[in-house]
Image (cartoon, rainbow, N blue to C red; front, side, top):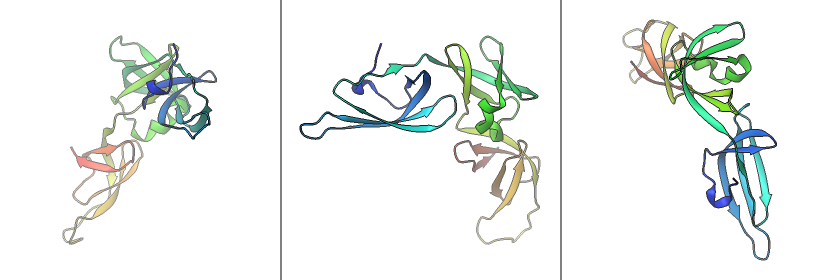
Amino acid sequence: MTLGFGDLRKGIAIELDGEPYSIVEYERSKMQKRAPVMRVKFRSLKTGKIIDRNFTGFDVKLTPASVEQRTAQYIYQDGNLFYFMDTETFDQLPLSESQVKSALPYLAEQTIVDIIFYEEDPISLELPLAVDLLVSDTGPSFKGDTAQGGTKPATLETGLEVQVPLFIQTGDSVKVDTRSGEYLSRI
C-alpha cells in the first residue's frame, strides 16, 4: 500500500530509507508548465530529529510504516535501562537511556506513557501533554513579596526546575506541561 499527496495527514507514520518518521507538516505547490513540488517535514520516531524533504513529480508515493502505539506505565530504572509495563498484557518492556532521554525530566514512577513500536520492537515513547510531579525543594515565600502574582524556582522529584507561584511549598504536587516544561497548576 502506498500513500499519495491526498492521503497525507499530520502524524501519519511513513517509512523513509528504512526508518520510521511521522509527518509534521506538508504542502504542495505547482507552477505553470512544471511538475508539482511536495515539501514535507518529517520527525524521526527513533531519534526525534526533524528533516525536510522535497518530492517532485505528479505521482509521488510514500510507504506507510508499520508503527503501533501501546499504553504502558513506567515502573523502574536498572542501570541504563528503563522498564515499562504494558497496561494490557502486563509485559515488561525495557528501553535504553538514549530512547527515553528527552522524556527523563518528566518521567516519575507510575507515569502512563505511549510506547511506540516499529516492527514489534519498542523504539521510543510519547509523554502525555501534562504530568503530575512532586515538589522536592523550593524556597520560602513571605507575605508581601509582590503586589502581583510572583514566582520562585522549584526543583521537582525528577530534577526538573520550574518557576512556580509563591504559594507552592515543598511536598506539593504540581502539573507540568511536557511540551514547554512550564508549571500549569497545583494539584
